[in-house]
Image 1 (tube, one colour):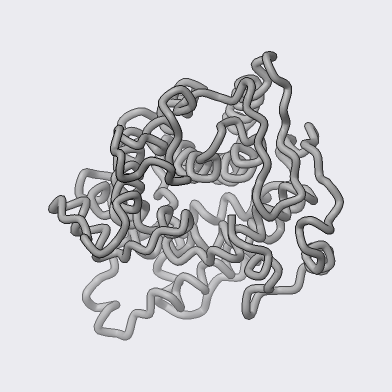
Image 2 (image 1 turned 45 degrees about the vertical axis):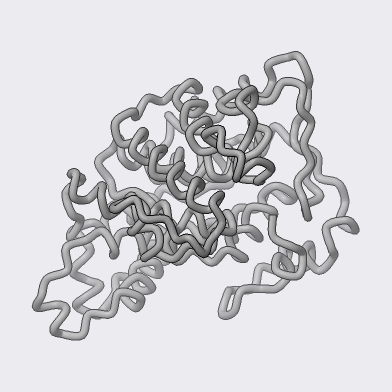
Length: 330
């Protein structure tokens, strides 16, 4: 996890969240211990039904979810999610690796393996959309596989065989730079039970609400010895893909804001920071995965500006006045 200096610095231009700001004014070791709380697995706090619904309304220009879409999504998701894990691979590095098998020799081997694992897990989810603990465990195993390579031995990105895809039973864990204390009930199957509970609750929600719920709660329960946030990020796409909606690529997610949002939920049960991050990320994912006509491009189409307008629409319900952003709304 990122150091406190980054976690404690508010993201530029971010709205002020006073409770969270006060909380993060102290370093992690000075904040009160925050043990696991069962009530944090309730659907609330979460994305409101209105905001979730508007995430569906901004897909008027969405590309079909076909193999051509998958090829582009693999690069975007792999690159962006790996960046959130600390990878230095660029989008061009990632595309060269995934499409042509060309590894950047100037960068660590574990970053290449991390990227390839993201590709494998996204391909797996594309064809395996079962709402089950077993499917989540398979995805975790794919994400944390070191492939027996001595060069990546000891990397924090991977786990030994006996821990890959297997919920914690006797491993207690502590998160770096956080006061959160994950649940630990050795020998009881508690980690597996919590994972099943999270999947069951998510199944009852609107697809976008379910996506946000999985992103937050699957990371919160820390069912695995490592790789929990990675697993939550790919699992958050299960309800979206199952319902025929565009998936989250996480491109341009601000890492500091994302980590701050996760820790705010872990320690306070506050989802406000992460909700803002999620909505921005989804708007960006939608714009990148939509069919923008040559006419719109010639007319000065600005993807970042359109993403911002769509995120504002999802948040507030105010329809954008600009014709480019308005074209995305059904």
